[in-house]
Image (cartoon, rainbow, N blue to C red):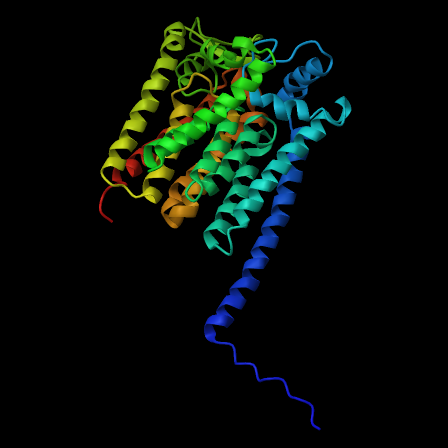
Length: 420
């Protein structure tokens, strides 16, 4: 009796062949991107250790001191004493002591790399989306150009959390809001994405409640540990700061210092542990910058609200509004640390995902901003401390590019409701 023959398989259709080919081709870039991720983070970790200018200064001197004080029972920042950051910043700072003081730096770099890896996996996990692959490649280029500061500050923790949040924000706005709330209680800037979501989302009430509820839980936990008013001390700590040398407004006095005008000079604030500039009128600027920041943010939100009321599409309005708000927090700020540039990654990744090639200009501008930032810090930071005119010029160019980018973002917010 003849054996039964297998049923003939239908010839693959062109559509099936296309899907198979896309699957094979999609796997190759993802593997290459993961290889790039590993190489980039290894290189950045080495630069953190070997680059001039002590990029790991905050980690080795400040974060490590806070962690060892807490472990030794001396004091816990944010609980027993005031804290320059929101209370959840202590989580990665204390967690990096898990393998002992000798491995604190290595553990810190490992924690940040792990968080970046989670965000990278979420980004590449969006099927075989060419936009996601391009956005992932852009992020790696951004990290390379920004340099060791991309790993060596608390902002790096929030950057990866916010990238995951922007991947969720449209399909799961409440989950994204909870994650953004957690990130906000590590470093305040992610509040911009929540504020933009309240303006744009039809579920704004639920978004606001999710933000408030998460914050209540965090504050309640801190109060139960005996923090008292210290849980809000990061607000007053920031308000009392002087004019930092890298801030856009600081450029007014950095140029005076570069021209050696009397009465203007750079100094080190031992309480805040940062370099600031002082000169004629800085007291007035210190008093005005915080109210100006609030007014500027309110103005951008109002512009976004008007666009939303005119029926602006989410994919045209939300990414541009987020970018405008983040840039406002950077530009209308008397603090201007190089790690602030980390904040720009998530808005650009969001824009590349939902708008594609329409976001080529901001993507390129942010890469240039990152490269200029690395040039200033850590490699040539010594020149900035003595107000070398060339370094002040480089810093001014970086800050002006941020102004140009803000102008582009505001224009996109205004045009988001126009017929297209």
